[in-house]
Every structure is written in C-alpha cells, then in structure tokens.
Length: 288
Image (cartoon, rainbow, N blue to C red; front, side, top):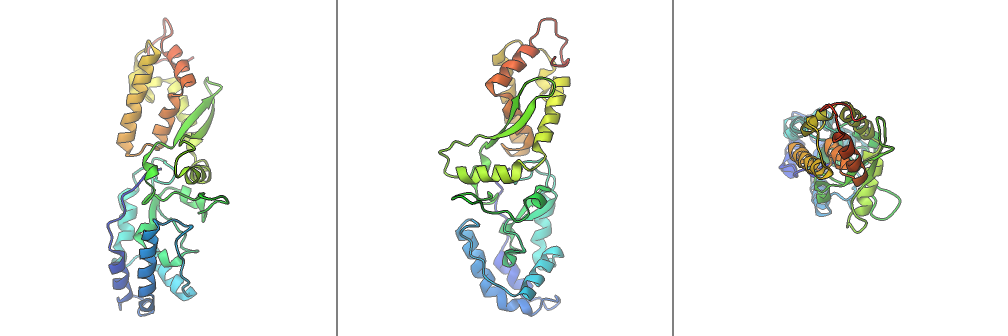
C-alpha cells in the first residue's frame, strides 16, 4: 500500500490523438466519443476517482470493445500505458504492499467502466492482488471503498501492522489495521485492508520472516547479529530498522515494514529482549 504521484499524462490530448489516427482500426468510430471522454475524465479528477461519485457514461458495446483492445495492445498515442507498467514493476505494490508490481490494475474495472480503459489516472501498478480483487470497489456501509493510490493521501501513513500471538518458533500471525477510529477515511481503510491486503499472501510472508528471525536474527535485523542487553536497546534498533525500510521501499505499508512494526508491540518486544540477552547465548543463534 502506498500513495503514488499522479501520472503526468495529457489524457485529453492522448485520446484526441487516438481518435484522429487513421492508421487504427478504431478510426473514425472513436471521434464521436471525444466530448464524452473529456467530460468523464474531468469529472473523475474532480471527485478524486471515488467510485461512489464517478459518473459512468454509457457507451456502445462496439466502442467499449475498441477501447479495451487499445488498452491490451496500446498504439503510440497511448504510450503511457506501457510506461506506467514498466516504471513500477520493481516497486512495492501500492494496493497491497507486496514487494513487487508487474501488472496494471484498472482502479475502476474496464468491463464495468470502459470509458476509463485507457485513462492514465485509472491505471494503477499492482501485483496479482489485482486478480484477487476482481471488480470489488464498494462495501455495503457508508464510506467503504477501495483506496485509490493516486488520490488517497492516507496511503502514505502507517495503516497496518503484523500481530504475533503464542510467541515461539511458530507463532500465530495476523494483520491489524492501526488507523484510529477517528480517522476521516477509517471506513475506506478498513474495507481496503479486509478486501485486498488480507486476501494477499502477506501473512505467509510475515510468517516466513519470523521463521528467519527465530533461526538467525541478523537475517531480518542486521544489528541483531550481536546480543542486545536491554529492551530499550532492542526497541531503538527496531525503530531504526523500521525507518530504514520505510525509506528504502518508499512506503510505510510495505510487507517488511509491516513485519517490523509488529515486532514493536510491547509483548513481542519484551519477548525478543529476553531472548536476545540470555546469559551465555551465542550471538546470532536461534531465539529458543
């Protein structure tokens, strides 16, 4: 999960150029859509892509098919589609926080909202959480919706943390949403975490990280290669590690940061401190 800068694309110009390109099979059919597309794109931006507010103008099945075909195989007029995909495939997924992207997600699904099929502000880099989300947008209760990486600034805040219970070699691992109930986007954050993040492989990833930490602590926190004598020192090292991971991945909700933030829970912190300071412990040995 992460806030992304809005693509610097002249979508109005790109669509006008697309509609006037005589080399394309869609010429001249798309010319009649220019006014509709321009108005729709402007309205989408005005409401920050909120699916409860975006107007979805009807277009013909033939026009929808042409737009979806241009998304699948973008002509030069739509070079931004490939550029958005390629520029982010190695980065943290802004939708679920996994450590890669690789695909493009239509925030408003192209089947239900074909007019936005090639609109840059509707194309969000994502991992395979995209296929798990399918066409989910809104919940049953007020304010419940999928967060938009281009418009929801709360994605730049720390929203989720790992939770560890029954501490030991194989603890119970879960995810907790940590935005306060008073947060203006609490309903949307909670819905996003439940419908996208928790359906990803994040808990399996966190469990693997714990296994590595338990077996050889320095594999996860380099500073733990030496014994740490106090709980205060353990907290300080974890806070530095968390800040470093946030900075490295440009996200406070990447899966590595979610893992380390869970280690800062007071109960987990106390458990780690005891095991990292046991008398006679061989440095970097398992946390038995």
